[in-house]
Length: 183
Image (cartoon, rainbow, N blue to C red):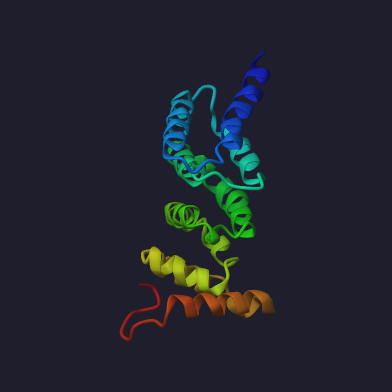
């Protein structure tokens, strides 16, 4: 019975997103309210249930507008989801070119900041222009990203990683004179 309940919970949380292809504000508000109720039921909608549901939703052909809001809410509720989000959800969003949908891109940039430094590996997957835009939208990431790159041991990186890291350093801009490496 318990396993059926959790399976049903995963399906219940995923199902509204398959219906959420609408741009109408009233539908988004109703969906957001329903998802909020799910989050309040922490014995049914545990972190593993949310992880499965979020993963299924990222596999949908079109992401619902409320997806990243829901993901941020999931991370706020369950900090234990941060590594899963950083290593599974964010890379799928990069593959889906989330920056092409402004409301989702805004949520993505907020999520990257929220779960930093766990999200920094995913930032390396972004195209150069999107890296620049991300740092422009979330300037607080600049120092952490720079430190992340310095800590990667660039002498040991393969050529692709060096190229990506160089693009990110260029996107972050040059260090101001007089600032130390460990700002």
